[in-house]
Length: 481
Image (cartoon, rainbow, N blue to C red; front, side, top):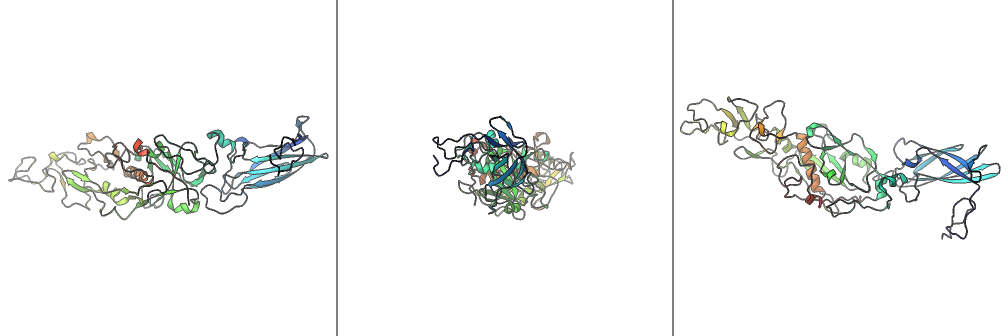
């Protein structure tokens, strides 16, 4: 019952919801025709295409359209949502639709990606009147989620947030179904086939664009990045992530930090990651470090605070200097007369057999060859006190003498024949970014060597896989400012 609503005779609607005062079907009604009505969804931006709607009068008794001279009048009722999309921080509450009528036709133009419009039409002809109501977008159950949206994802509660992932105890991502339908202005990530990355990779699109997200499958993580190629043309490595998040049921959307204020952060949380261009991690100098015989370590390439249910990890950072030094630090001077000068000779084939930067003669005999009075070293010599020198070879890239080769091997190998995969600088950076964002969403280090979040680095090809243990920690939330 709706006693506060008066019954309007002959409009075809039981206005007061009272069966005791049934409405009499009208003799004539106004009906509407619009191409693509069933699939139309609102968009916003500078020049959204208008929807063209034609009104006609239907004779309910004769079951045919009325012809002749008909005068139409139209009135518009529109939503007034703040802003134009979910993360829009604008306080603009102007109507979400505008209407331009002309004869039996009107055009509706959307200014909001989640708005709706209701047009009431009246028609006068030959002493008769007819009325009708048109809504855009089509929303049969009037729940603010259009039919076209629910046809894809099923009947949804506009306020619901039910995304789940097997093995993860946290339900939802903090976005309601209506917020996911209304959509976002950000950059989406697209798969890249650039062979420099070696394994599956996702990179941001060129333009900031409006997109809607999946309210039933993937949780949505918004990332702002700074000091990668898109932010700073002097840094040649692009922002990129591996496939681990996508495989774990998390859709990542990434945007340059300098554009975040332009598009806004309403109703979303943003994980931030920056490339530190000038300072290595902690008290390190960024260079590789000698530990033993042809045994080297590298300085930390990234770090992040650990996220939780309320906040993504702070100070998520990659470090440009140790990344660069990992590729450019080459502490071995090629002195070989034994063969291929483009390959780091095995330690047993050089006179510097204990890798201490000298020829290691004992009683006048060279330690590896037994040749007396040899005038030069046969093999690759470690440069004593190395730090800033860039010589011919690194233990991380045994064929680094080749002009065409710019990769590193991990695991470290001793012969060219043992190389299974060489990694580029952009690839190692991609691995580091993905690992540190894992910390930012709550994943600690794991003890599973095939997992991206393994505490150590047995190889650089793990950025497509979070272990089940790692997935159980992921906490995605979007409550926003």
